Length: 389
Image 1 (spheres, rainbow, N blue to C red):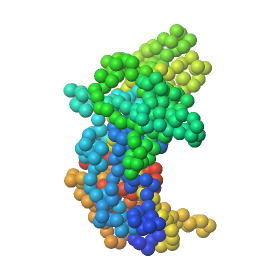
Image 2: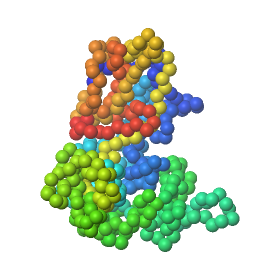
Image 3: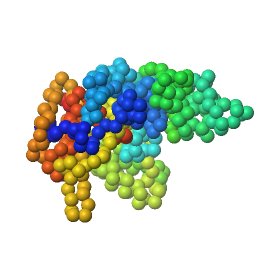
Image 4: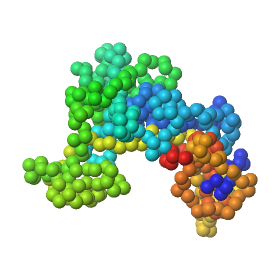
């Protein structure tokens, strides 16, 4: 890393393209942002948990006209920083309580609450989604029929309609993700409260279009993910422990031995339906608070001058590597040499610099970006993994 990389230049065919009106670099949405499932909503992740405002990064004026470098302005988005300060590393994100509605640890669970305190003095908080009955939607494009109120998506409201609640996109389109100019009224707002107050055993959450009742907060710790044996009166077969091993393990009720997730999945698949997963609650890091979605586009044109091209006499293959680095006061800005140096083997990287390296064939082609750099194609994400990165 660092001195093994050489910046991309304006003539090498690798650039950040600009919009048609040349007002900014071309980006699919925000330059970069924290996941929409937490902030602002998302066409993929649905309604947000922490804020209806997106938490987006803004490019610095210093690199606005640079076709090979993007550097943010150094400001952590307010919706994020107001709650969590600087960009959290994976080791420092808060712990959350999650509901695993399908009982499968391999699938994403539903975030219900997060610890705003410490492990020894926890302060479990959450946000209640408040659906605005005054916001309505013409779902059938027929002005002669009544419009559907936002409360049709509210699992705790008499208006709840599971025939429409499976698609939350109409609501997302009213939030910051779909309406950045604020032209329409938000379909939901978020109200902060204590987890023990909201989750009283009667409160429901919207999961895949269904109104799902959440157990009382006090019962979560005693309701883990389990597997039961339906051929034996639904007797307990195994219990999931997320902190065992590297990725969590099941403990068998019969002899207290440990079984990996993959082995348990194999047992369930071969049981003929007798072994059944049961939903439950699990604690773990809110990992997406360490993730940033990258939306910048990269244009690749003439590669004839790339030192990373190899040929077998029939076809020529040219490569470049994208890398992101989040730098803070604890990390020195890398020095980029003016000429290529001997290429190092590709690194998994413990820093977080996005870039492309130019070296010998097979080496990546790297503009290293100082500051909290955002550089990648749409849909990629960066995770701030290490405490000093």
